[in-house]
Image (tube, rainbow, N blue to C red; front, side, top):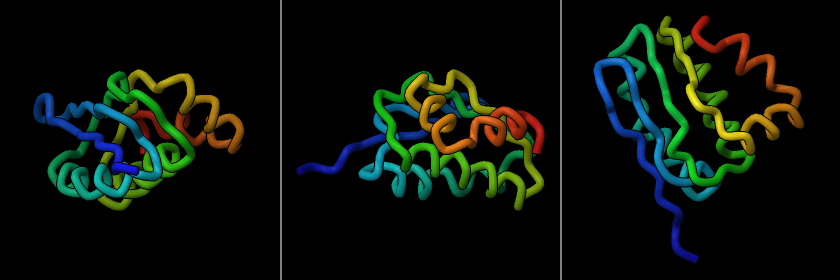
Length: 105
């Protein structure tokens, strides 16, 4: 089975968009692609409108991004969380983490 491909693209100095699936097959690449953005920004917006599919690995990636932002002293805000990701966060009892940390780290 071919590996799913997803990308994170810079929109401006603090805004990024994720495109494609956020799944077990793609999150490692997304994490690798995103590493430098946390060292470059004190405030980040990550728009998830372009996410086509997600699973629990996508949720784990958001949690890791929150951790990395916190380590760097940055703030992060997720825009357009896909309903599937919101449902996963609810099932994992992490919806408060995503909403409480949204924009405030």
